Image (tube, rainbow, N blue to C red; front, top):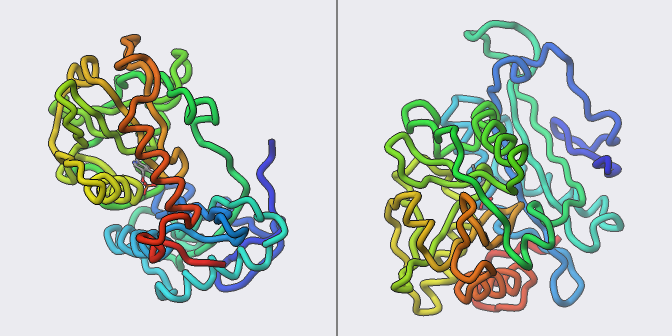
Length: 309
Ligand code: PMP
């Protein structure tokens, strides 16, 4: 289905969806110098719409831009307000939730790698269901370790969510999907597990120890990863942020992916090897339930993470 809404926030004002175009000479289109975010707004239990961890996402957008020295001519507050305004204007479209996509990139003007053109900034919202499918969320997905390596921390700026860097993710994702799997798991240059093409990864080993790769790995500092670490630790469970090998995944009890788009998606098979009992395990289920309660405003301990539209 074609993604469509009524308005887009573009360079400081709301414009009609069809007016959200840029010139083919847009610098970022040629060289990939841009940054973006993926944010979700959920319908809360009392019927209101709330954006999950909005400030953290906008802060990461600004950090990403700072890393690549892309000047964003708006403050954090202005971008937060732009996002909320976009949702308020289209409340009738997004009563059941929305996916939000702020993006900032070098616009047109001069060409060449040394050019510095004015930055364009947009926020778009659309209706996006479970990224890896409702069935994936319910029953788990099949993943494949990719032949593509997550790039070294001195090649990719891994603390940034940078548009050009996603070619690596797309190569991995397409390879996995064309081979009949749902998602790709990328290893770092030493062969340790890093993350999926658009999600962070958690596993539970046979001793019941929960592990996720550390932030010194070439992974995005995922906001869902951070949320899940907090939910697990606040529930009295320990989580180790350590590197582990691909074969540790082959013999573990549970694997799940975390991400704004994918939410909490269990993995039931890796490289044709069944994971645990081949269905979502108890820790993954716990995290899923806890996460959906938090984003829907049903857990007062985490009310600060919600910004009501
Ligand atoms: N890793 C990559 C490569 C991603 O693109 C994403 C999605 N932004 C994530 C992890 C998960 O990050 P978050 O939980 O902040 O959405």
